[in-house]
Amino acid sequence: MQRAVYPGSFDPITYGHLDIIRRASEVFDEVIVLIMNNDEKKGTFDMQERLDMVENVIRDFDNVSVTIGDGLTVEMARKLGANILIRGIRAVTDYEYEMQLATANMILADEVHTVFLVAKPEYSFLSSSTAKSIAKCHGDIRAFVPEYVEQKLKEKYRG
Ligand code: ADP
Image 1 (cartoon, rainbow, N blue to C red):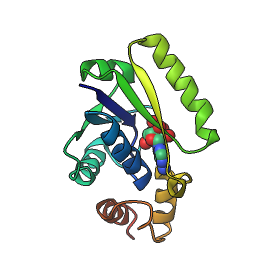
Image 2: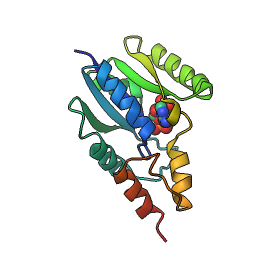
Image 3: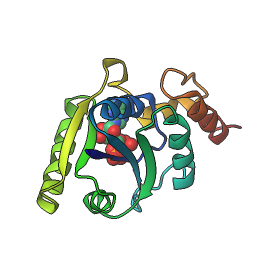
């Protein structure tokens, strides 16, 4: 049984993340979306809000679940019984950072393998920050995030 973890901030989850989740769910038996708490990076949404949004948008996948974690990602993966970390690559700009992360994780835990999945071209420009910047200016974000997340962003930036 191949269990994979997909770690990230998901602040909030976008269609780009969701596309990676769908691909991962087709490759691995089980996928756990791991929302990592980063004390140095104060998020827009708190961890419970992010969890609620992910739970809502992964409902259609029967082999995908979500949980919250902190500390080292590889330690979280070990605790969850997973030896695969999924990361998404949008463009070459992601590559350097992701290589550093994957190499550090490999040194920390050699049995945990990082697998990169490539973003769909239409989502290759898309990040949580882009969606938030547009939502802040009350722009149309329907192409970027699922409806439930759109509502939550609207509530956040209302007024
Ligand atoms: P982090 O703060 O760990 O980068 P993110 O939530 O921003 O967390 O992203 C989690 C992972 O998903 C990263 O590997 C990132 O490259 C990937 N990702 C983010 N947006 C997209 C997208 N639009 N398409 C594909 N992968 C993406």
